[in-house]
Amino acid sequence: MEDLPRRPGDRYRSSTKGLAHLNGSNTARFRVRFKDFAGAEKFRKFVSQLHRTKYRKTGLRYWQHELWNAFVALYPEYSMSADDLRTALAICELHEIELVPVVVPVFRGCIDYAPDYITDMLQMFPHSTLDQISTEGGEQEIDPTILVCHECDNVRNRSKWRKR
Ligand SMILES: [Zn+2]
Image: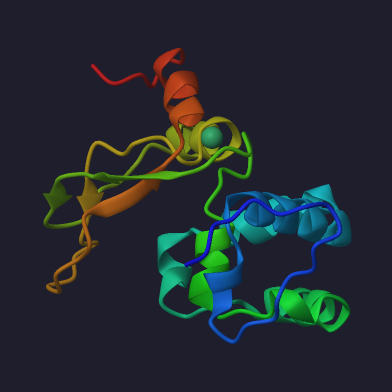
């Protein structure tokens, strides 16, 4: 992958290899452009749903497809697969910083979280490092790697839900 600095005015070369043409600063520009297009609130919802575990296997939801297709119609140079899109938008929807992969222990079974924990988590620290990831009762192997936001961890650690 080429990662040369670009001069202002350089055009993206179109590529069928998804993110091959998006380096760091182009990725940042893509996020700004897509956020402008979607509007802040929808952008946040889009990013948030992209990283929910249960949607990871099924790809984009219907409304996401609609929004994405409209965006790509305007900016065909950003055409990419759902997986590449997930990589390009691997940011925390609250703090807008990069998510980083962390491996956590796997818990075999279901974990029931307290409702007020879930409320606080979704509003304040949606990507904090989980203590463990559960198989939710399934027998299948699950990927113990999760994407976390360090700022979410900071927020959680200052709250009553800090890890002990
Ligand atoms: Zn965050």
